[in-house]
Length: 451
Image (cartoon, rainbow, N blue to C red; front, side):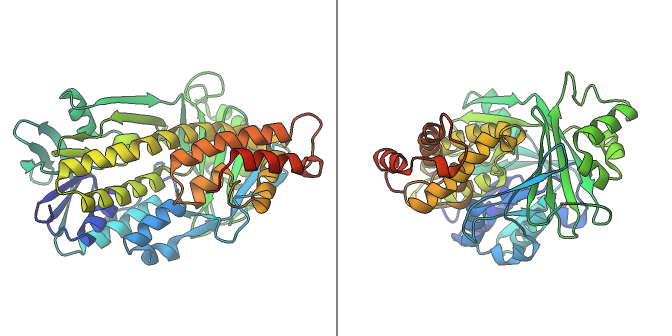
């Protein structure tokens, strides 16, 4: 397998990291095709450059590939959520209780620039920009890729071709049309628009070591820190209906909506109304496909196979974990078909789990984080983790801070832990001091085996 030419379609962070990992495994004939221009020569697209949240799973993948140190200086630590209430008050909710239990804000564009630069510098890896996958001929085992510079149509062999071409994957659609896979795209009824908080001006309680959230029930605003001390803010809102992107067309309506619902953020975003009117509405949705491969010819990876909504901060981390697992499957098998089968069979239950948890986390972020009962249960979860560290680990921590715990395990244990928290906080319990910790110990020892 090591002498086989490998084609990778999609030069985003997933495709670039995969090329680096496979090269490190000893593969020396890797070609990476990217539809867009070289990110090293361009600025991030306005309105589409949402910051990414890098957590333990992604960090583990980057360290495994030997590239983490190059990115380390661009990471901004976020130690918890800062919840902004409508009255202007704020509450900080830590992500964990250990020094390493943080997540990091990083520019998607800067991350992509660095990974592409590393991949392109490896002997045996060639990168072609403005090359678009157009058609697939499974009978001839070739893919047609358009060179948009010379308008040439290249016929590329597919033994193998790995498609890391994102949620709108052309390869996924061609595999579905050819009957190799079942695929479904679920469009969330919410979209997003990016806004900006400049480094200068009145930012009030905008701590730079937190992810800021303005939960407002059916919609929310979030803000992540940038290296230049500005923040990238994102408004998540219904696409249609009352209080939606569709209903907010007039300048006065936009101004009234933002100023009344997010007054402290509005004061710190002098261009928010103009940005709201100029920036496009971004797509939010999930992708499900099964299986992920067409024999040994082609494989879907990352968002092409299982795009998820961004509300658990795991999209990129999940894709990077894909790369690690595929690399290990390639090492264990003597054929691409066997490696692809093993990868899909072992990985899909976990990506299905994080898809569900990400959707659940949207409701948590926009509604529950401001609820006193939720805050009590969060505090109790941290206390139970202190007392039973090998048995009770909050689900958020399992997902974000423990790459060694599979997503499916985190989901299953999380359901048990939620049931225990509900039972312990039922009735008149209003503080952790009111909790029956003897009962808590009995339930945890009986229902949660050690991790």
